[in-house]
Image (cartoon, rainbow, N blue to C red):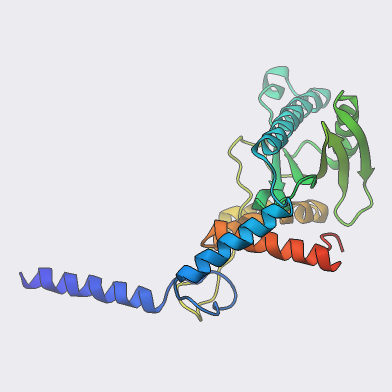
Length: 265
């Protein structure tokens, strides 16, 4: 009986401790950890209505169209990787199993993109596919698409990119090859970030297994991977995605109206 009481008290103490020291994600403590009041919910609703009145949200139909374009692009990438594998004298039965994968990042991945915005994407390929293949044969395959309006290669940029427009959707496509024989369909590029449990605890960004993805990669590939990894880290750190997205939409819209917004510096 005494043991039961002791455990109950211990659980109560732990719960009380967690309330006093809630999980904090980020490099600084929040201004307030108090729960929202009724007036806060009302103001949030008004903010949402205001943004919608300025047409800052995409319709479900428009979103579905973006997803279809991305799905088609991913299929093209898989076929391209297999074709290049054959050209590099890989046995047909092995080449048929080769995969590449398209990842998204930036505003689209965060869920705060607006109508007509482009999509930031990253093409991840296995180690036998190089950047020259990307800017030659892959660019040619994009150009051959009936729905492709243009293809522009920017090889000398700090982060090399192919800019294209497919079926009315503009895309920036970066390239990175991993030191892997193949890219599995469930390949994850994220940092395994650990949030702190107190205001003063240090953060440990990334575990060894995921950092191994960056080992022996050329600097351009590391830069290309950075966007996806940081975007996914943000989503992992933010405790309330809905509130975060609404706030970010409002800040982006305000910055554009004030003429101080730029996502390319």
